Amino acid sequence: MGKKISIKRIRLIITIIHSLLTIAWHGKVFKNVGLNPSGTIPLNRVITHKSETTLTYIMTELIALLLVFLFWKLFFYIIENFKKSYIVFISLFFIGLIFLALCWPYVFAYSIDNLVTYSCAVRLTPDYWHCAYSSYIYGACLLFFPVDFMILGIQWLFFIFMIAYTFYRAEQVTPKLKYITLAIFLLPSFLVIMRDSYRIFQYLIVALIYAAIVLFDIIEGRQRTFKETILIAALGAFLAVWRSEGIIWATAWYVIYILCISAKEIRAKICKLLIFAVLFLLISIPQEIGMKTYYGKDYQIVNALTKLRTLLNTQEVNLQYEGAEKDLEAIDAVIPHQLIAEYGLASYLRYNSQVKGYSDINQSGVPADITKDFLKAYYSIALHNPKIYFRTLVNTITVSFAGEYVFPNPYYAGEPSDIPPYKYDAWDIGRNDLYGNYHTYVWNELVSKTKVGETSIEFQSKYNDLLTGSRRLLYAFIALCIIELWLFISGIIKFVKRKDFASLSFGLFGIVLLAEYAALTIVVPAYASSYYLTTNYLSLILAYAALIKRFKPKTEKTA
Image (cartoon, rainbow, N blue to C red; front, side, top):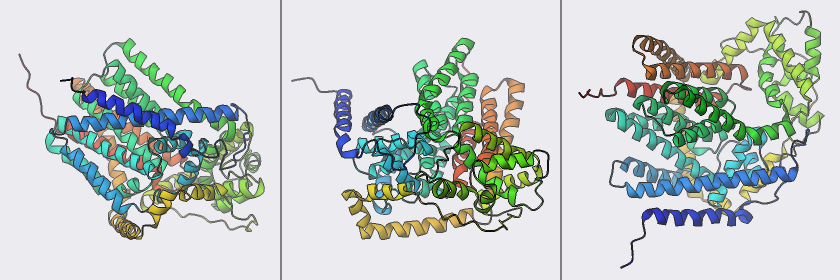
């Protein structure tokens, strides 16, 4: 009788076959390769168009192969350990699939920017404005299996894995508290995260996986192998590149993780930190190429406009200081300040679209030196009006978390401009790309599912109102900030008293998240809670991990 084929070999064969299929599906997934749906114009040619398309192809395929490897490794891991305590994982998995089938009538759901990212992905054109990696991931999901729904499906699987992994790590430390992990299903934004393939939600899921690894490693005092540390560094560096907020928290958390728990040799710590730096630089190359080629510092301009509008519209604003006229001229070189006062963020989009005639409403075409002068002028106006600027920061928080202005929000009182609203053809192109696919059309035409989905949406809306109304979300934000401050103070005290590196790490993590909140409040381009979502969830998992650590059973010392 021949030898029985091992499960490991079966997994290898299936993984290879699936990997080859991702290559075979290129013709089915990609169309009009190289065409930019946004009509973005190259301003500084850093890389040729052909090289850009080739790089996108390589990155998309690499991520697709990674998804294939992770999926089949996880699938066979579940099979091999089915009789163990992972029944929760299996149950959540199948409940999730049923939930998807019944309640997800729309492939992408609400965020219109998803259409642009999708349209870029199927053309092998990076969506640099929303980060090249967002379109790489979309394309990779389609190569995993060439159905549009797979983008949301893989997002769902990662979400289930995140919950299961956190549940498992909690079970290993403090079993009686493990079920708190499932409380994520009760959070008001849970259904939104799983309904929408928005880049913020995809980022959040991966960020929580990274956070769970770091936090529970510290609780357990787990020493990772050099190979494992490199993988953690790669994940952290990726998060630092994918969204700009990751530069602060993902980088700082890794540094704290290495300094407080890793091997005691200084050279080993330095080596691991250098590896992170190298990985960050390598991973950031595609995005840096795109921003230098097409956008320059446009994102920084956008981040200033909402607050600048408030400053310009406030009656008591001081624009008589020495150099104020020069500052206004620097702003006018990008967008007329009267237009900013009237429309705020929309002034940028209108001006680019209707005055400059750009197809890409996010592209200003402004040279680096003029952008630098604009930002310098903005900060100069803010520094000469600290009281008004502080009000804008407070309003940013209260409007984002409670929908209320603590301080009056001044409106434009001048003569209205005659600039028409902006138009962005990329949204229509993306919509046609998506709904032009037969399987997507059929899915959205299933009336029974649509009605169930609409009922689910209505339930979600009422549930969110119940949990977030009457300033509850704002109070929760304040509570999280207090917890993080308390973790920092107690961590310092415990470290001074008994060299408790774990408590020190948690305290430093808390301070990093407070710094993240502060940075977001300063730079967010609009009053929206979605910009704070990742930091909110990181604060929650930090608080949860601190609770796990607090009630961790003490091990008996052996002679």
